[in-house]
Image (cartoon, rainbow, N blue to C red; front, top):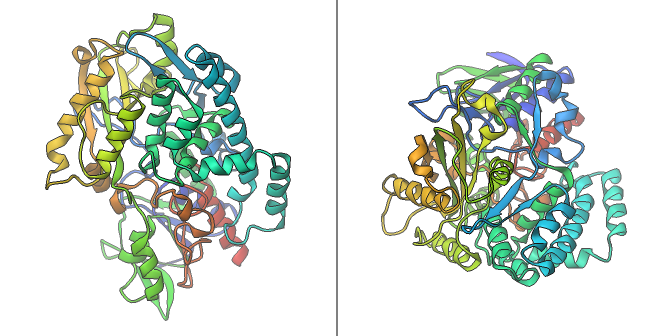
Length: 526
């Protein structure tokens, strides 16, 4: 057995960030990752068996919350470790079948100019809403970079100072946050196309459009306006690979293909792990960056936790509403024609297109998903072509294009005994049909495709319900309650055992913040 200062269970980007920061501080650190590739939901892989030289981001595609300063990108100097970023602007767009479109640019002014062509009223309301939500992020920013239960005086004063600057708008912002996204969209906007695009975006919350307290999803649009969207050259895996190189540069060891069987508990303290191959590693600190249900309910010996904590974990919401995402990837022989003028098509192809049914159709689709039904009619999708701005993803000189298609809201579990293995093809065909409304003839250009249903995502990731969030990002599972009240703050009730990752404060999404904050907390503990 090897004695370490810290052992990180899970080589997702948060685990790698935690390892890099502990190693930089002089600690001996090893990361154990079950898969043969690091990154968790931030990887670049080859999904097409007949075109192994074409690569795709396999889950996350763009960096959004990672741009919120101060960023681990700068703290770990990831540029020096090979990370190159492309600004994605515009980052979203909506295209109608008759060839009209509007785009969401980093500039709120430019976005509102485009929205005004559809509705001057809605453009004004969008500007007002986004300005208020940007103020919210500036107020929350210091807390998001601080310990959730002991943030310290400086972050508190910084947050209060920002809040004082925007004191008049905060009550309105909180009403939006506490309401449902559906109600907020209806209250602010009148145009059918603008409502449809924002409802499609809000579908990614993992909750019904009418779920109170899930209006926070609309704030993510404001974050993108204020701090931008960036895409790693080489796909999202390049981000994780850069963090890995930073960690190894500082002396950390990264072991892949090393699944953990259980956490070692001796005399009431976590002292290491036993691997599934029978090997063992010992450490003063064991940091689990897998999801909290896996860490505490599967990897710990039965009876280790108090019943109260077990009850909290069993009640933890993970796709609680039965709404989960899935993916369809397409490889086409060449860039397809669009119902837009060629210059406009070239401008928008790289960004996520918010396509699908109208506002009420999206609402009905998500309601049906909650009941385990794949509703008839339009399906909300977010297609984008990563290769349109990153030609490293396809062979040199090839005219081929990739399409990354995020489907934000389908049933996690299907009703009436149906199986995703039987319905995956149905979703693929409906996805292609939806895209062909704005890309006529797309199906004739398809040379390869791949589908990942909710079952596929869960199987490959190995985490509870395959949720990239690890724990739903509802208001009652955030801040000092993330993932649960007893487990907030990274230090677990078991001495020597820590919890980090997407299910820890401050939020899911690719940003590395929980990994960084966990490392800081461990270093302060001595």
